[in-house]
Length: 97
Length: 205
Image (cartoon, rainbow over all chains, first blue to last red; front, top):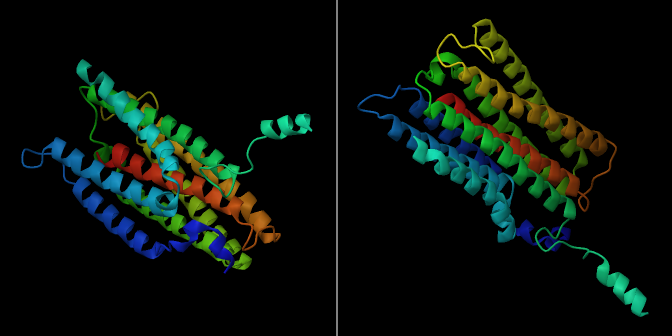
């Protein structure tokens, strides 16, 4: 097969599986996002749950649709740098609050 | 001869060790890392402005959720049609590539139409860049800046995809030549990925 020239070609992702995961996670995320924060559902819990869903969904897109899982790991570090920096940007100013 | 040796030494290696398929793919990844930084700082700025505000509205009350949840669904579907298109051309099916690229473009266009509808509705409700009847005025400014910046990316993506679809239709790609299709796909999935984050941080949180 000609495709054997491309080593990452061997990993065959079932894209529909990823699609159903993304869809299910989006539905769960919306359900977690609709109720207003309250004493029994504090904002910090709500934020943690929602950010957790978002990170998992973003990782699914990057790893499988963008193929990052099957690339050289150094490419993954390039992709991770902006996220690390942005978390740093927020943490850096938190002491002012 | 020594001159020739020194010349060949000065030439860049033909392959990048990170993405052996092409330099273009590495170029797109580096661009996307920079672009992620733009979105990241916008979202970080949003978080800090919201954190320091006394009367930030609850976004879901102002923005609604049904339409944008559907827009999220739409972008996820368009990512799937994008990978299906790449799969098609890897198997030498250039008609399939054109078909799936067209679906992807259609998804992007519907997304833009819905965003225009949403913005119109919000502007009529009084939410402006400098005015917000529901609380802090910066809510409107940050909302329009971030969703607008993303919308521009979708617009750019639709143009970029159309260009690739046009070339695909002219038979420029094959089972051994699909690098440009993979690269446009990276851009499009990134736009989808960013929307997943925007949807969470701007609409749901």
